[in-house]
Length: 73
Image (tube, rainbow, N blue to C red; front, top):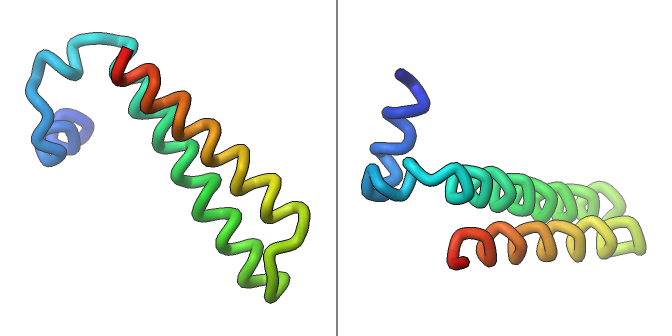
């Protein structure tokens, strides 16, 4: 019930969520956004963008792009 309310809150039509590939795309996009947020958190902890933060930021960007590509394909 909670997931259906969450999907309804997004405002996407019901047919969007009927496709398993679209649901997977949203999950990939969520992981990518979480990785980007983690990269900014790491940069704040280290007080600068070091190699690890850049690596996590790049990985998050690639994961997000993959989720978007799945959603549009």
